[in-house]
Length: 273
Image (cartoon, rainbow, N blue to C red; front, side, top):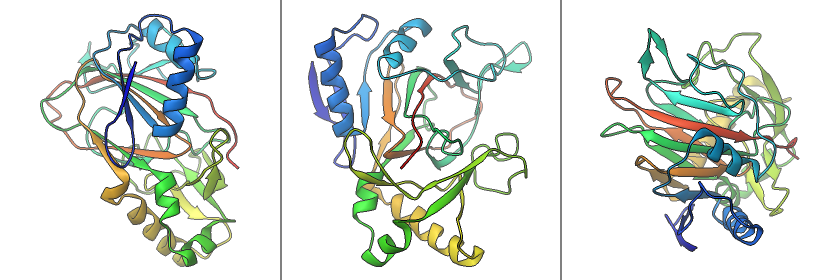
């Protein structure tokens, strides 16, 4: 097993590992430690079916169940497809096209996803890249006066999949939402991370609307600075595992006429503190 950084900001590439085969405990613990250090892990040249990908994800914790099949692709209850491909008149996956703003998976629920794992199968010639932001570093770089404003506050996170699934916009009154600390402590590393995002964080609890929007706008811009970000250009066979407790991710635009197909697994998490 060979470990090497993928960028100055975030991420470690793990080479010399075949995830289609079961890992012994020592190898898994080395991978887990690298994940806590790097926040995202990249595995190149993997050849995985649904069951093998789900089995690797389950080493980290209980898998979330997919509620909507989006065209019926896949049979494993914990596996979801991200795709713009149409078969028999129906999309075979979710979130098919276009840019997607920075977010943290399921932050609008009481217990957001701890980890997400995405495996690339078909990739457009250009675009559809995934950007990852290091929210430890974003928190540590906050001006002191801003830190004092956010450290003991909660923000409301909401997601309107039917209305605005990829870009910030108005949300339906019945869209799922939950208030979480704006700064959360990672249960394994004990490090603090900024926990707000442009797509899903709607307002700061107990703060006047205008003041809330101004502060959130600053935090979104701050956390999306280039020094905190790695942009991943996908290749078929890439698998990336990221930690939703201390990262954000986003997607760049791509040509909707080109096929894009990735397979997703999410690991259940805990209530942020």
